[in-house]
Length: 219
Ligand SMILES: Nc1ncnc2c1ncn2[C@@H]1O[C@H](COP(=O)(O)OP(=O)(O)OP(=O)(O)O)[C@@H](O)[C@H]1O
Ligand SMILES: C[C@H](N)[C@H](N)CCCCCC(=O)O
Ligand SMILES: [Mg+2]
Image (cartoon, rainbow, N blue to C red; front, side, top):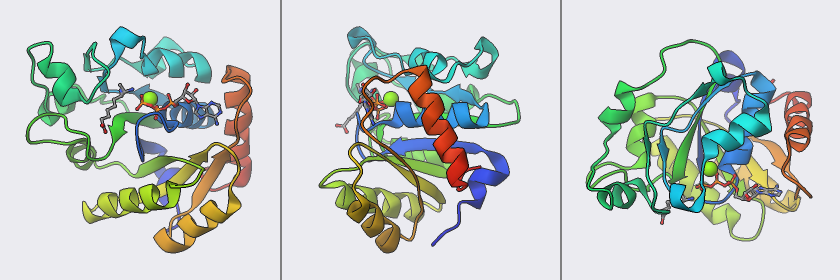
C-alpha cells in the first residue's frame, strides 16, 4: 500500500471525488480543520443554485479570512466549468487558474469541481489542472454500493497521470467491506470514514477532524 507520507510531510492536497456531490467539500472542511490549512476552490459552478463551497468550508472549518482563497471563476450554471463558462460567454483554462495560484507556504486544501475528467474547456479537464498543480490527491467517495468501481477508476486515472494518491475518504454509512476492497485492490489507504451526520455543522467537522488526527494516517 502507498503510505500517505505526502499528507504528513506537506499537508498540501488536491481533493477530488468519484463524482459531484460525494462529499468533497465536507472532506475539504475536515482536512482544513485538522491541519489549520488554507482552502481554495478555484472553479465554482452552480452559483445560481447557491453553491458556494468556499463559504461552506470557511464556516464548517472555522477558517479566518486570511486562510480562505477566493475562487478564480464563479459561474452560475450547475454544470461542468466548460459549459458553465460558455453559458456566460467565457472560456476558462488551466492557465487562468495557475496564474492565480496562491503563493503562500503551509497547509493548503484545493477542491476540484466534480470528478477527474470533468471538462474545464474543450481541451482540458480537471485532471489537467491537478497535474499542473502537482499536489498529492485525496479522493472523496461514497461509502455505498458502486463505490469500489468509481474509486478504482479514479485512482487509476490519477496515477496514470503521474500523481500520487495520498488517501481515500469515504462518506456515508460505514461499509467495511468496501473500505477493505478499495484498500486491497487500489493499494491506497482509506484515511477516514465519515458516517452519516445528523447535521453537517462545525462541531461535526471538528469531531471528524479529530478522528482523522487520532487515526494517524494524516496526522
Ligand atoms: N457523511 C455525510 N453526512 C451527512 N451529509 C453529508 C455527508 N457527506 C456529504 N453530505 C452532504 O451531501 C451533500 C454533498 O456533499 P458535498 O457538497 O461535500 O459534495 P461535493 O463532492 O463537494 O460536491 P460538488 O461537486 O458540488 O463540489 C452536502 O449537502 C453534504 O453536506
Ligand atoms: C454544479 C455541481 N455541484 C458541481 N459544481 C459541478 C459538477 C460537474 C459534473 C459534470 C459531470 O461529471 O457530469
Ligand atoms: Mg464541493
